[in-house]
Image (cartoon, rainbow, N blue to C red; front, side, top):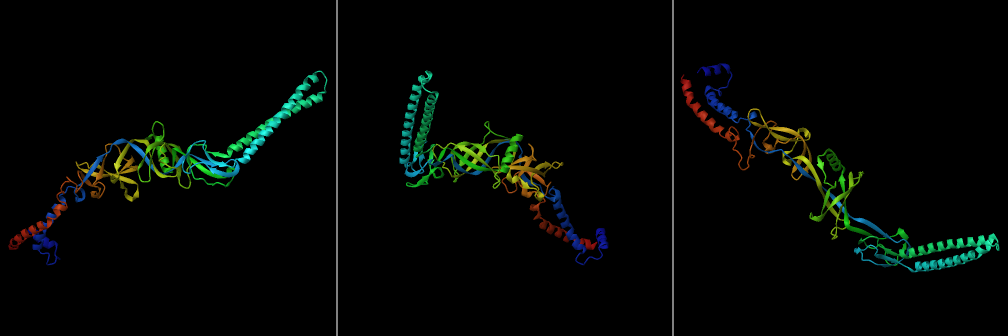
Length: 436
């Protein structure tokens, strides 16, 4: 009765609707709602979020790269005639395999055969002149010793023999040139490989080395050319220098080729070249790998993908990609750790991290984590603010997930019933209050 009188004195301007009967009906419901808000044990009145976590550990993780590439012959030879002539015959099957030394084209031989025959005749004439000059010098030698001839006659005979010997050398070189031209009229392949189509047909005039006849590509072994982005090359070089990444004993990356349909080429090779210069138009460094190709399954000009492996990241930390979140304000990446709240409970503690490459469905974490940290991997959607209470276990909705905490949404539906019960009790107490 005293409480009702005090309420009347403190609220003189209340409308008739806010009568003592109404206040007595509303108080039990208000007390019940306040009690429901206090139950739940979480900060800000929220229940702990069920989450799953993994314990961070270090491991040696393979380092892999994959790039678009194109095949090329390990030796690409341009076939050109070294002499001028009419093309008489093609001696190979276009697109087929040719052997080293095999004749590919034949030019008209007649002019070069005639030139060789003339050079042989000139050589024979020069040799005959040399023999005559030598005999003359031999006859005059005893006579000059007996002072039977003049010194001039002997000197002329000796000089004539020397000139004849020089003429023989010149004639012999002319003959060698003629024979070489005759040999060049038969265009041979210098290597074993696949010959391309003929660019000149029979009857065409070939004006020497400026005319390309065909090409021959050596395809066993075969080259695979590709570009490595400058950023990847820089990271790999820095990681190797710091010891974070180690290569194999030979210091080269292993290379495997994927066909355009995704199937793997069975042979593997090595990366044997990487240009120190960066292509300014692409921002990439030209690189090359060499692979065996005994069955000629790879042909020059094919577009493939190369998979580089053989390097190992030492003592790396790997976490699932779903556990890595964008930091507020776009300032890098972050994860949530399970940490103690100092009162016997656990909270979600944010931790900024620096991530590196993707490995399957995980991030490589370069910095920010240490072995033993517990990273939350499931249930991040239930963490509404840093430091929110969490409980380790299956996420909500997963098999084995804990039931909803008391005082949470599950108990909220009980409030109307409690209010009705409170109203009923207040209605019973109202007449007694009025009597007093």
